[in-house]
Amino acid sequence: MSRTLRNGNDQLRLPLRLVWNDGERRPRAPLRLAAGIVVVLMFANTGRTLRPSPFAGDGPLAEVANNLIGGIPQSGGIALGVVLVALVVDRRVLTDLGLRLGRGVWRRFAGGLALGAAISAFGVAAGVAAGFYEFGGFRLTGGPGAWALLAVGTALSQLLVVVPEELFVRGYIITNALEGLDGFPSVPRSVAVAVAVAVSSLFFYLTHSTRGEAFGVMAGGLAVLLGVAYVLSGDLAVPIGVHFGVNFAAMIGGSAPQQATLVRIESSATVAESLVLPPEAVVVRLFGAAVGVGLLVGWYRRAGGDRRVPASIVRPSLRGDRGTDAPTERR
Image (cartoon, rainbow, N blue to C red):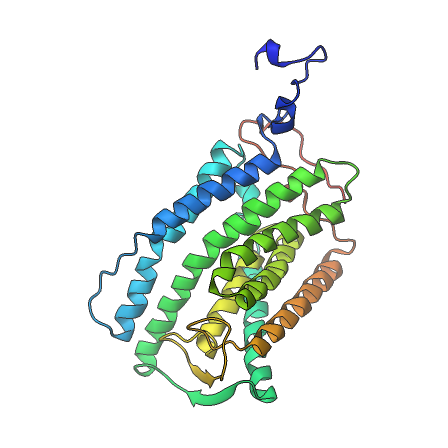
């Protein structure tokens, strides 16, 4: 930068130093977060206006296929927005956002999937036992073959939603918030992690509360679990698995009825239109998320002993800086 913008110690003058990280040649974390949120929401809202429905008719297969194809523009807009901001504003390599497809990624995804599905299944089972759900039997739309196609289409539709959301909310927001807070030596890493997870959970609450306050609270509570899964594992495989497991199991298990729903349940109240989700079920899911946090912490402590937050989350790998020393871990 121009010498006129620097003081006698070759540092950027105030207030420029408050908004620009000279050592990393990129904006400070709060500006990166703000830029990411604005750009991604703009791309997502633009994509939402483009919802193609190429298949005519109102049959189950046509409905599922149209839902899958219709969701591509919005999900693609989220992913494209994250990639653009990460490369241009953030100056980071994309693996820094948790996109690591190395050894064990499918095992971590499967573990998250099992945990997420268990939370939804526990909510239904507890509801039937407690009486706020009424079990209505099983259904197999169109027979085994057609149902299998419906289930695959529904699963793909959910992955199309979940992967870009996790890339942005956990990969981009938590990574940048944690990096920014970790730059202050007086802030313990545990506090930085808690604040970063809280910020991402607040964003998840705000973007999901359009379906109702109770639904937003439930989404925010589950987002804490997703954030903990990200900061403990160091990549997005576990939170993607948890998120997908919660959503897909809810659809198969009847609390979010779809054409592929296998279990029929009924309730006299719901917190959100098109869902079978009474307030009691929200409480049960939040309890399940809290148990999930405990299980994840216990698992990673058992597997890694004195578990540290992976350095890849708090020390960026910036494009053009490949020759720098590898980051070191700090609590």
